[in-house]
Length: 267
Image 1 (cartoon, rainbow, N blue to C red):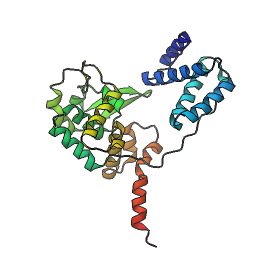
Image 2: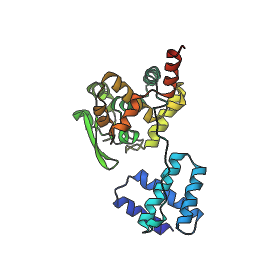
Image 3: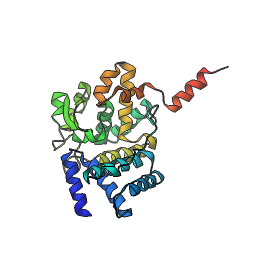
Image 4: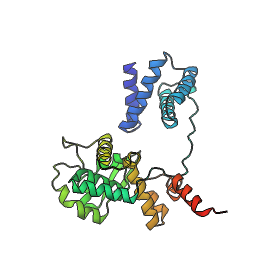
């Protein structure tokens, strides 16, 4: 089976799938063949139901997508199963507030945790993803932008001038081509970025549910729309394929919806 998974891995590389996607897909295949001896429609349907009972909907859906891709690779398209429909988000939840954001930065600065300080600042000031933050190189401080290949397309991260000016002296002390290297001087992992943010956020009393890199991407999007109503521009900046994805930032969170209802309804 290991040789078959190796072949599947090469197949995914040729499809130009990201390393994280390849790891996720091969993990699903190992799960499948750890439970079933044969690839057939009956086992695929059972695997789908098993995953739905075992995991959250998003994870279960990803496992099924992974196995459907494997069916294509194995030249067994008749074994593919229907995808799991996920409920569409109607709003963005667990967004860090400006008060929490500023308090987090203040605590990091007071304790001279400059690496995490600038991680948080770059996430919130550019709207980039953790995987994109990890790839940023020092060259972007000269050009004000960084171009990378992500999710099968070219993506440009724009760096605000004020952030470049503020951070320039700090990054002169970093002996690496990357802005945020690990202790060995190479590119930091996304899990490393997440764990650093969570570690210091909890230490300084920030709510755990907002201590993830995407919370700062959400904050960027919401603040951008409040000051600049151009949703098409925001969609480009965030690297969204569809305006429908970006439009979620126009909607109030569940907590904000409740607050507005309580404030408005008096009859």
